[in-house]
Image (cartoon, rainbow, N blue to C red; front, side):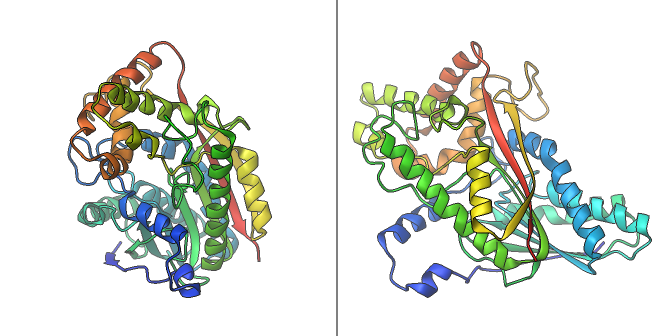
Length: 393
């Protein structure tokens, strides 16, 4: 297996082509694009070293992606397969899905007695993503894949594609398979109309109804744009498998989706009461995130009309993913401080941009202490939605 890689800048932007003047909404979107990224590098607080939750979710849901790409290959027998991983981030999870998909296709083509297809893999995330760490890992990935697949496997060409997936990323009809895990619950911007969400940093049990409405409508706008763009980029019969944080309940204030950020708000408000953070700073901070219910997700897909739904599955994973174990090999402890570390790896850039970096260590120390208390007293879980769809011919 031969691996080459390139980094290509995304220059396709339907919004800018339609209107060259930035609206207020566009400016808010650009703000999120510029600051929303996982902690880069390989340090103690990096995403690479604090993404075991995401790894576990991928391992749980990868059979759905393998099933989808197997059906795609058997139905079309393409000579080349273009795969895009949207919201790839960096670290050990980035190439895991790709490797499993390639191995699934290679197993099938050998069983059918066919030559191997060529593989084109596009790794996408926002421009602030640590693409350097990904590219540095490719030589070792090449060596490992060559050993696993053996002779006869087709070349695998990698490209980095920086840009927001809430817009066009690729030429029309060029992709066969799209995968995304734990990315699509992030919105393109903080919703407008949440200025009165005082004391909260996300939807919460004490949020006024207009806040829930604003978040839901932002999700609807974003997800409909996402689906329309991917429909342009996928070939007819192309497959897409998406996993995102969600909720079982139809109640958007459910603890299934809001609790983790309610506890972060508690830590921030404690620091406000001690004069360490200005109250206005907390009141003006809101997380650009939405965790839909299965019915909300299904409604948006069917409303768009470009895709048929093959599967829609709900799963859950505990906040403390080891259930009482401690794994010293990867540094993740099964306590609230460990949970706070993987939230920090995801959310720290947002907090630093708004509050500055001087308070960050204290925020996450208090946050970890609060989480530690809660997980010792109650069952805490993240709910995952995985949807597998096919582009209509």
